[in-house]
Image: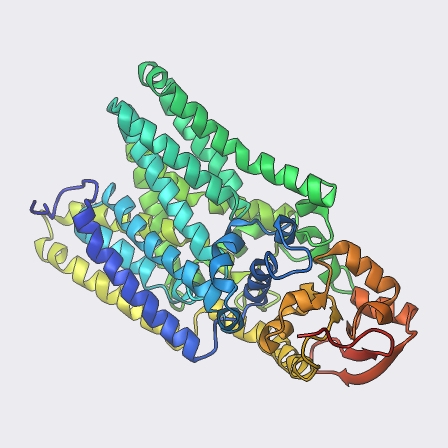
Length: 539
């Protein structure tokens, strides 16, 4: 069937396939560049995500308890098949494969979503702006959770748009299938990021409101709606139950020792001065939107992009056109609240204190900026269709050229998300590389007492299985080892300020200091050999 270039219709599979194929090509180019430059493990969070996925099976106490209670479990479960290969754990490819798949799916999804709102050429332009974003391409080669959540956000929004359309046209079988798919995608989003909890609640409200206006459809799909509702609430309830069971507090992820609040308290400067967004939604709005525009566009052209996206937002609201697409804007209120009241600061070099922290959070607004900006462009084109025919013909080629120049410009100046990773990894990577050299010199099979939460990257770099360490992942054995370090490990790695260092200070008996390792910007590590425990296990 020939594609009508002026029709706004849902995309077919045949129409979507070339878009997905292009995303495959872009993703592997990005992987080649990131891998060859050693960028896959720059983010400490990427190293930590891989460590969590690895320890689910590679641990003294393998199982679900190793998922931890703060970061949600789905990203780690998706990495699980890949991270058990030692080489992929060490080089970061174990995290890249799931992210690449999510990037490809998100590109296909945003094109399909855009086709509900735009003619083919502008849907393609919106997709190009999203797919060619260098920050997104970099993240899609790492173990970070943004590519997965962006894919879930886009497809959840798309399925909601399709479900609402099916409700209005009384297509009962389509409504039932979309409800079940929505439930699955929301469950996945809930288990990926806490943004997904808000997204799930918003989608449930949208669907319920639409069904309430079509009572006959609601009656016919009541069983599917019950399943959908169950899936929406199952995620949060099960995570609360998980935290209660393993950590004895259903809200451990909010107020436990590894929560955002605890991290903020730990990293608070000596003068106790809060960031500008703390309890200030206006500043939080400024920080988040400024970050989003720098993540999305080169130099200061992000102001134009946000202005166009707001214009598209106005068009949708005034015309009541595919209103459920407004779900793409969900990250905006979520992060305004999180920055203000959720202990989640965002720092970028353009705003005081002119540093780098959490700049990747702005990426979650990229789908909304891409889709709604080109919705505004389409509106302008239609206004010019009769009075400015030449301008209409040139608009899309010029737009595609500007998108390409935007990508080149961002890469030339180093994308913000990659720049943050480069800047903030310098001291950590140097320290963990030096520590890995020391760990690699231990006799084969040596048992190591080490606190892994901060510098599991050293074990990763050295290729030491996590089951060869006594760490906080097995609380019982770890507590016993802290009470008598020399009795429970052949070697002890005490990094200043961590629980092992405190235990060594209290119980130094039977330990001989082997070396002290100090690097710029990191606490010193002291390595001890036990005079009492067997230093190595049999092969």
